[in-house]
Image 1 (cartoon, rainbow, N blue to C red):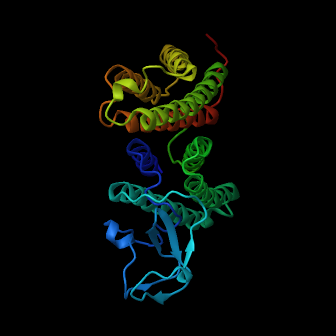
Image 2 (cartoon, rainbow, N blue to C red):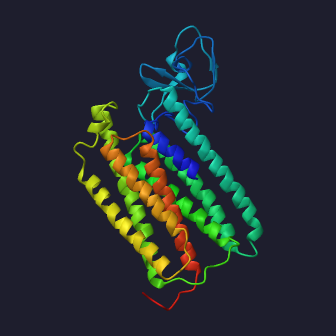
Length: 329
């Protein structure tokens, strides 16, 4: 799942979201083209139903299996009606295609997990049920990916797509917690649990705001061009300032968790990971704003945020599994 999130971040950074303008195939092929000539009309060529060519800056799909003659015959082709985007960039196409391959790989892994979960049916039906729910959510996530393409990268749908990925991560972490063989920590505090819930929610809010800031940057890139990164945030939206200031609250809440864990020796060592990830998040955020979006800073910022959410959620699961210590701060 994290490989899929990484690939999605690279897709977003490179603007490759429409590299495959159809779904689940790519220009009507299971293996996409590498040259524009493959998407131009060719005489005496066999076409399968659904395969795509570009004609007059429009996507045309083969209406049936047929062999072309010497000239283009419109009766053999149908206009692709999901959208009117008809640009081929081989780099964008293959970046998006690899993203889809990783999604299929993740789906296969989840399916295998669900099949293996059947052995838990008598012992703990919840494990089996949630495993198959993961399969359903992976399918739903694939459908969401299709709607993102059909909408030509609607910001709202991109955000929902991202949040659904985190929901699946959370569900898989919960299953990991249910089947973990490690011993339960001795105790926790009610205040620690409450603060941990707040930390997870704050991270989700921060991620959602981050996707919206990213959309603003995408719009500025379209307006100003890719060669002037110093201008992309020259006049940022108010949401950018909220996103930047909110990071202080995220840091303070997690520092409070770290201090409480250390002071009372609660044993939640992954809190150290949380602070490390927050540190990287802050540094990449500073780098993007002050040093004109260094290479890989954008996908790294998103991926670390996703890892931060995952570790926080797992610490929350650990805290929920432990008995509550009566002593308070």
